[in-house]
Length: 402
Ligand SMILES: Cc1cc2nc3c(=O)[nH]c(=O)nc-3n(C[C@H](O)[C@H](O)[C@H](O)COP(=O)(O)OP(=O)(O)OC[C@H]3O[C@@H](n4cnc5c(N)ncnc54)[C@H](O)[C@@H]3O)c2cc1C
Image 1 (cartoon, helix red, strand yellow):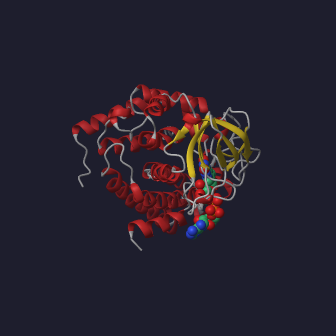
Image 2 (cartoon, rainbow, N blue to C red):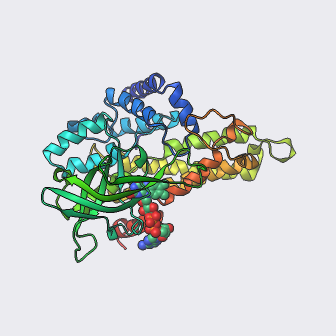
């Protein structure tokens, strides 16, 4: 693998940097500095995503025919690394990353025409309705009922842990449409307008957000919700195929760029923070060895990402290898935030809620701001998008053939 960039690739890197300088404005920078979840205020995400779309860069993984930029693997890598190392806002994944590939593969021509340009334009905000109170890892046991009432569908039940549902205009849902021999049979994939009568969103307050200033997850209730029939994606009772296809896109992420950024921040803190004996923390050999160990593991992950993602052409999914990226990436996210917490030590204790748009001064040094919240928030990453234990089951079956 040749890791040296060509002249054209270096010019592309400059173009990405110029874009970031121009569009990653002060309001977004302040919000990104304080976010513990990766989400910032909706209007900022929309502003950022519209700028990306104006440049044709919103959906790097989409095939060109649907509006993807048609980049090489090297360009995608450069783009990801530059965005992550600048700490730029994420593209909220539910529409562009998760639903869009399903619509491209299983949607009708009308659905493609209606939803894909709209997702690129960030006009409709989506959320994901997979998990239910009794169905997480064992997703196929889901019970939210959807009945065919002739001229419409009728839905009853509830979804849980629905990220960002409070901001969503639409939700894509897995629903039970028949009792098959196997639980995977009799599931359908439908799209529901969140403004339909009978849809209620209830926030769930998590440990990292006392006072629910910036909720991340919700429970969504569906009480006799009428859904137009054209909102079924794929075949009736065959939604499990769409569900599995979507999950490979959900998990096929690159993590190394933001991990490297986190480690740089920790290194700077350890240079400023004093350990015993008037020496900076970084001079402590045991601490330095621990930091170096994680840096090496992040480099190894980066090589794995290059190997796996570099083989893909636009629109292709990562397949079962997405479980490797998800497991290793999230283990390292937790290792980095744990080390971050230990680095600031007791300065982590004043727990200032990261209020959206808030301008409360921090208690203690600036570098300790948000460290506790991010450490607590990162407990989620080995659970969501399919827990890491489930990813290991997938790897053992589909990659190792056990
Ligand atoms: C912050 C956050 C955001 C989320 N956002 C969304 C969202 O937007 N939309 C959505 O639909 N869902 C979302 N989820 C839900 C997420 O997908 C589930 O939490 C996850 O699939 C695990 O399910 P569960 O919570 O029911 O845990 P369980 O399935 O009950 O698992 C509990 C524990 O048992 C282990 N376990 C279970 N089965 C096995 C097995 N067969 N082998 C080995 N170990 C096993 C698990 O690894 C876990 O440690 C979110 C979750 C979190 C934490």
